[in-house]
Length: 261
Image 1: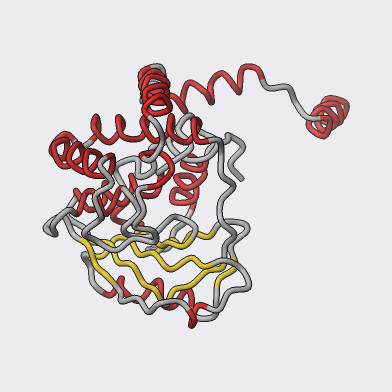
Image 2: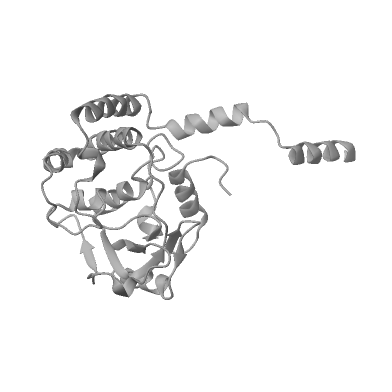
């Protein structure tokens, strides 16, 4: 149980609590197809593989009717590896597995990212970039299938703000990739096609928005990034603990313990 909100916080807690070498992740509303786990774990026979992801399809659909895909492997030696890792070229977190030994000694999921945190975006793709920058590889496996409904869409202004904050976080954390990041964003704003496979090749609602939306989101995203310190979750936990009130069950146990003493 992880009482503090935040998807990254929960993922880090899961990694800390597990004692197996490989840790697989599913969303609570994702249903794995037969053979999902075996397919997802198979690439770890290669000691350099630290992450694997699978294909996500809507519930009720037939994966066999969709266009065929090939497995793909990504390392930091590949062209445009940073963009591919951080912008959806290697799958998403509702179907992934990690090598736990590659995740020790550093915070894999930045706790400012993900649902329930200040930036509602990108905790798994940020982690993929962190693993690849440390010399590991990631693998996408179209045969590792989970059924998952599309995420609820927030208003475009909210999603654009989070995207700007995410870009600033990437710019801050991966100094060696700043030029590549700026080039990628510039290409997307100009609606240039991607040169690598992704679920959708479209530019998306954010970069397709008018300049007023982008300017407003840029200001709000920058402010969100600047006012959210790296140790945000630690401060949040401390504040939450200080303000927390015991539940009725906890109060009952406390009274019974006092009486027994």
